[in-house]
Image 1: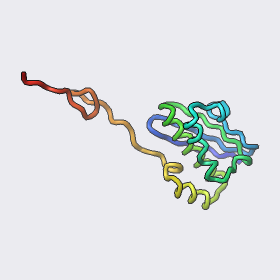
Image 2 (image 1 turned 30 degrees about the vertical axis):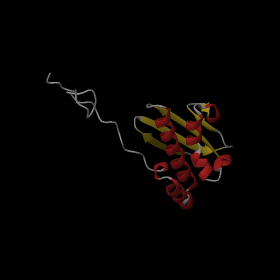
Image 3 (image 1 turned 90 degrees about the horizontal axis):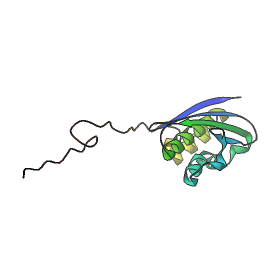
Image 4 (image 1 turned 120 degrees about the vertical axis):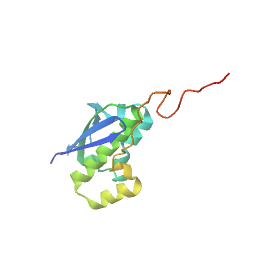
Length: 131
């Protein structure tokens, strides 16, 4: 059985494919053990820790693009968690993910606000002086 899922965070988009296998997790064709920084790697592997290491039964291939390292890590963990739930068809696993952190299964829809005229950013305005 093959399951395709996706996850998003800011401008990062991750697409995961979950298949039968022996526990290989690859991010952009690279083993997850080589992903740097370490905090991003730990965040990506959170779904397996909650699922009591169902990792031995499945291979996960993830392609991720856009955003920075933290946004990509969040997108990957959402894609992996969704893939595991869909692949296993397990309601208890879904509930465990939701209880731990809702963002494991639900995309974070927040986006950065576009810059507007009259200031250096989205909300800040240029200062004015009357002297």
